Amino acid sequence: MSTAEEPTAITPQPQDPTGQPSGGAGAQDPGEQSSAGVRDLHLTDTVRSARDDARAQGGQASEWMPYLPASGSPHCPPGVDPAALVWAETVAPGGYTHKVLARGTRLRFDDPTGDACAHLLLFNALEPVERLNVADTQKIPWQAYLGENHPLLSGDGRVLAVVTGDSSGRHDAFCGATTDAWNQHKYGDARPEGPSPSGRGLFLKAAAKHGLSRRDLPPSLSFFQGVRVEGDGALSWWGSAGPGTHVELVAEMPLLMLVANTAHPLDPRPGYVVGPLRVHAWRSTATGPDDPRFTAAPELHRAYLNTVDYCEARGL
Image (cartoon, rainbow, N blue to C red; front, top):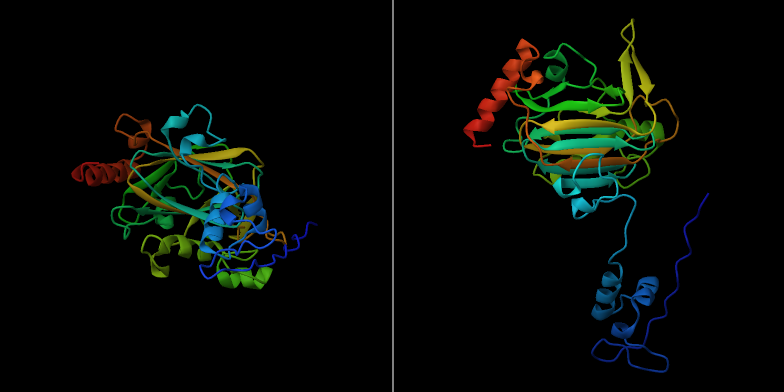
């Protein structure tokens, strides 16, 4: 088990009346220190030192971060032109992300380790009062299990997004994300910054960045950790299909997307188990009348007509 490094003790330098080092024996002006030295010592006792310390962090990278520009992602999906990417990010285990996406954007989630669990909420980016309705998402296609060609519907009878590709087949539209109370009971901690944040807690942080609150958060769905209904009605956790699987979506409307990568509420493992989640999005086009999905079923056809009517009236 790794342990945190011991903090480095820093001896303050004498200061002159201007707040700068006095230049005594061995003193060195912070502006003249090397970037490596500033970074290692974290000298922040003056404004200049704090500036140099901050600038010395430039160029450092984390395993869990957005890639800026998105075209610089080291994990660009196969067959996608990196220049077309508008979002590229690796979400930390127990982390969250959020994004506003244009109509027609293609989105891909990747589970590199087999332990990601992508809890998802979708909103109409133009009018967030319209949001994902999990019940209609199951009812309209007459299918409770998410998979390829499955529409994700709003409560207004429109298609927010549709699953266009799926190599996992292990998803859940029954349980939603964990709550603070659940995680506190199971793991002993539910703080967003702690070792076992809840999905709902992270959704709340993401929603707040877009002016939304707890009352705006409907039930969510999740990808990569499967749940099935047994003959007696009990919910059974099927877990992951393994590492290297992906799910692709297309945004049929302008979307606000919230994602929490947290342990599934039915995961029977005693520890808080979740792996990294890769997210990529790129420019494309929404589903049109010539696509077989558009008229695959009467209910879905109506939902697509509602969606096109809404978008065309707004010039989208």
